[in-house]
Image (cartoon, rainbow, N blue to C red; front, side, top):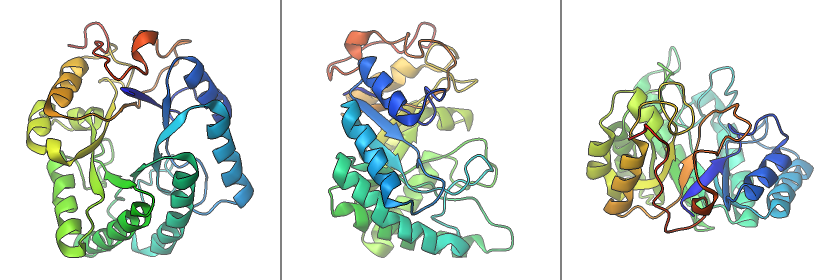
Length: 278
């Protein structure tokens, strides 16, 4: 399963069950989602509907974000947000339930923005505690918590792979939680000025998931200038065997046209992500 479709950013003109179905019909066997509900603890019926949509589509849910607040309004996670810690902790049982019922085992925990008037050290200490709680919650079903750098949000403190690895080290050292890893989102890293090839070399042992989009524009591979095929090749050669998340925006009638159907779910895929992307 070399590629998995982020159905929260792609195919958004369709409702969620239809997005999952279309991704499966396009030849993909995996999909990932941002938190698909407006609250941390949705009604049981809404959770059942999500699980049913995943099951009915025949697609494997490969990733799910924890509740991250109001993303369109600029929120980027509750992990380090003191006033909303209870929401985050209440969310963990729901996340774990969905993971258990769908087979999802990767859970992205957005770190949270800096909050005016709160000491960053207090936020960071809380993040260690909450990430450890999240890791232990999903560990019960064999899951892993992911932490990622983010671009475009000045108040989000994790900008580099090194920033994330420092957090992972604190969680492991201070809280003893080990089921936690780096989400290497090459789009965010590149926009923030990182040397992605260097990050792969330095941090491959911490990489638990990978996501891609081209830049500028956060479009499909081949629409920008990033060497996505080279980076994927470097990751594979370094030992990364997991799926690569397609987390890009597209209004193209066929947003997956850059990727031959035969390569969308074959584990031996070595396809180039798009002409001009190397």
